[in-house]
Length: 256
Image (cartoon, rainbow, N blue to C red):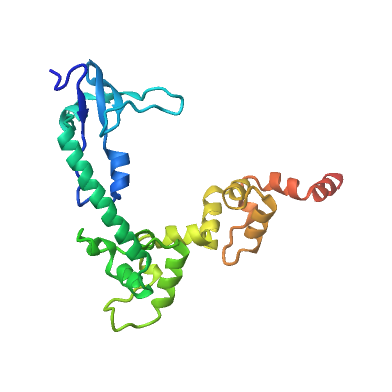
């Protein structure tokens, strides 16, 4: 038996939970929906998407209404009949939360380097009372609205300075996202590139992955890499790439 019927206007409008890390604006955009039930079939509702507050139709870029099949289980569990007083009250609380977040964003944008470093050292999970301590360069940059490179350099520099205001003192290597951020900012380390080559045994794949399809750069990287015994000749496509890079040498070999 269906919880809702044809013509019902239903909504999952609700306050954002404290555990949700999205901003209130993102929460409203990504999580909240109001629908008009057009049909009920088997395990699905066929519904038209409406504006949460006004119940007006929402049109796509082509001027067509947004209509979807939505799982009945989700609708029956999370939705209730639309009521203006209820959704308006939630909306007013959301406006207050948005204004508060704007002020907090402005304050974080003015935060000192020492505050940013302490946030990183203390760990964002512990700072927000979410449990296990984790240190993240990405989370720190997001929280204080700073460029990733700025936060990397700040942590790297200040980890070398002892501070009486901070019981902890951690460097970028202590971040749980150290490797990902390092690669995003500076690209992969040489050993990672060499490891990729050793795994795939292909100069062409290496060129495609790390050198914008430049076979010569890929060839020179392996040729110059120090400390590994398995070099270019171990590649499955060595002969093909050699012929492409050194056609004159290939012709000489054929003539001889």
